[in-house]
Image (cartoon, rainbow, N blue to C red; front, side, top):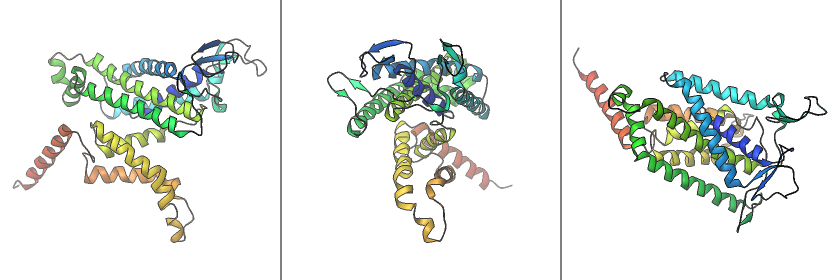
Length: 322
């Protein structure tokens, strides 16, 4: 979660690679809305989702390998570093020539990415029997992302109650005790990375399709902080807390700040926009939640008990005579 934008970037570029004319020397069409005469790789949107999920799952395991022996803040530092590496590769992907051409501006051949120029004109989702999506018809996009959301919630709830989910909880609580009880730490951790990356890749593919373009500057570190704020405000370890946090912060970001409070500085004679300070506002909310309600708005039952017991223990220690 600390480097969520890694998977968004890879997922979006998967949409660019497999649903556009970017790889113009290829000619592959599978249930796509693009005309059969259009060059490039044009997969159906569901196949692009699957491709993005598989690519991100593999990279999730690869990135997870160097962090197996790390704890706490060191894991955050390594994942953030990988995020910067992926972003740099996306910007400089024009220097990575895959095939064809001689590398000159007149004949560059096919490169890994298009750099800051981006990959435009991505195929719109198409489903047999439903037809091709339209940019101005938001209803179809709403139902598509709602279906993806239901799928993610179903998988998460099933994972939470599964043997793998209980193994994750055991490793989180006490890794030494969990390993001594026979839980394979390496495989369990790598599965956590891969499954989390899978969901991130799917969301990136959806965003790429919705924007109809992929650009290296679209996915920044600040977006990862925004997602992290949703989790902390909603409640760490809680599936429904994450949903609540996402709804609340999205409402604040896209409606409350720009439409309700944006004119507030002008009433005091100040000349700036609150939308420019949105991430500062989210940072303040994070501090406020961590101080006043560290378990979040809708915490997991286990997490709530842990924090309550810690607070009671600290208060008891303060009351002990010195």
